[in-house]
Length: 199
Length: 209
Image 1 (cartoon, rainbow over the protein chains, first blue to last red):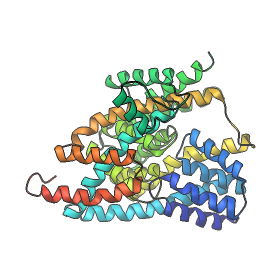
Image 2: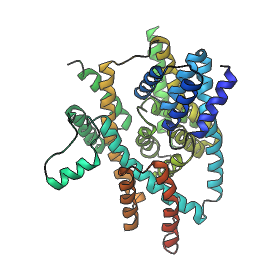
Image 3: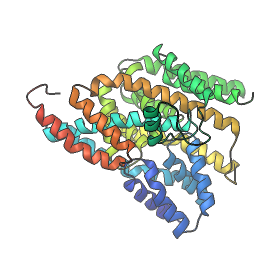
Image 4: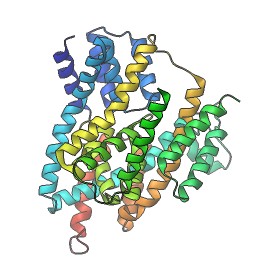
């Protein structure tokens, strides 16, 4: 694929990603696996799992991967830039209008509602990240209700709590109260996890 | 050679800490501040852009005091609703707020550069795309546990800004129940706009905030 075509392709993905980068995955799959046959479905699956465990936004990671496999470092950069271009334009325009009409009730109401949703999302993110670290499996809502109502534990089979991660979480909570910067906490957790896995 | 690299890192570290301390960073040093911080933040985005919110709050609100916690909430709100990646849109919002369009571009470059470097190296080295190293997986799992703790922290700090009366509590509770029951995020966001209008119009006479 030529560089320009690649750029346009990723501009399209960037403009359609409403609600986060993971929304681009079906589009990417459709384009690169079904239509252009650049990846096999297994290779695409591998690519997603690597993108999720490496640092950086998932969609940018995938764009870089696709670009690199298409034609080296230059293509990788072009694909990533294509993905962020629409955001720059759309968010720029949106910020301009929001600043201009800051005091109208429409904008204030919009922010009021959106702030509440943002707060809900933060609370929900706790559940999501717990499922990826402290808990081995998602704990289904109907099992939670059953546990509360009957008084003894109901959960999926082979369900367990990763006590190591639980410990990390508790220590991080305590350290956070002591005003330790978040970056240091995260670096500490990564180093700790890396070395404890050798035991 | 190693000494040279060490010197470079140390100098950068020194430069960075000077930037963090300076109260009125403007112009070029502000752009450098944005770039370095977003580069740093992007290194810790593991599994979703929301990870960066507590870090951004820590860096820009608590340590360098350039933004207020209300700005973080506005950012979160806007990022959910506009097309684009969460991480990239947050970078644009903060860059734009602090240094205009130039700042937005610099912040975005800072956010995507770590990905480009790391992924290019991985794609060049692991041709078969198979890295299931147990040590690295464990390290990331611990980072995610730490992220949960930072989420608890940021929620405790933002609570005062968001939850002002019982209606807010009710809205939050309703939203959580909707999410648990499997309502999609986009539907929830669309639903939130009329709710926000309602809340603002009901409180028109009271505090104009």
